Image (tube, rainbow, N blue to C red; front, side, top):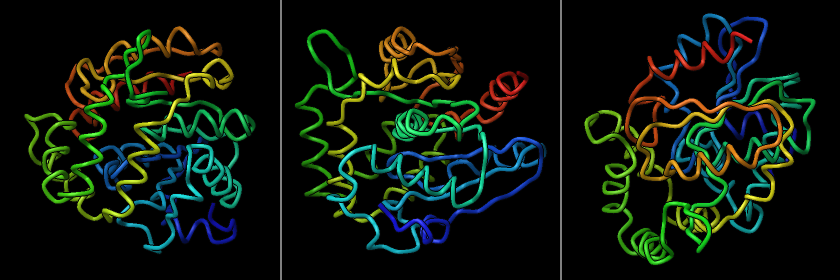
Length: 269
């Protein structure tokens, strides 16, 4: 993990807006904080908003910060998140975690529930790989092919993967994520992909006691509806499921108005 006093600088932490509540925005694999650009102005009108880049991001200040040994699981990212929130002296935040960051936020909330008022899990999944009794969305043969493509033809893979996971009817959003992927170094992309695609965090769901909201699109090739149903059945704390009527893994990019409508309803607590 990053040395704590170095965290805000290392993670490009930036606070914008003002308000009674603080919202923390955490991006997923291959992205950076620019994936929140479409919704950030609205949020900043009523909330203090913290945006940052994970150490693997191509936007990270120190390109050598990511180390696959130090970041072998989501627990290590959760420790950085806790350290960042502590260092920024934030209390009872509303955490919005996209994709892998959803599970990172869950783990952080189990370790330090005092730091989180609410969790919004956007396209989150505890496990991507299928099992006999669990549909995560990917067969191991498909995951192995992803690893092969990252290792042997990263540039081509970034284009095809972005087209796969972002709504194909929104080319500008696809290009944005593709640009983020291309900024991430291949030697970072592969070990992190293994952490993401081979991880299994199903056993933490019943330990999440902070109120949370599962936000999912109606058709997400990364996170099928079966995952949403699984999470809904396993999380023991107070939670709700919200389905956004759009396709793809990035509703904050491809359906920002609908995303904000869901957010505003959630925040009216």
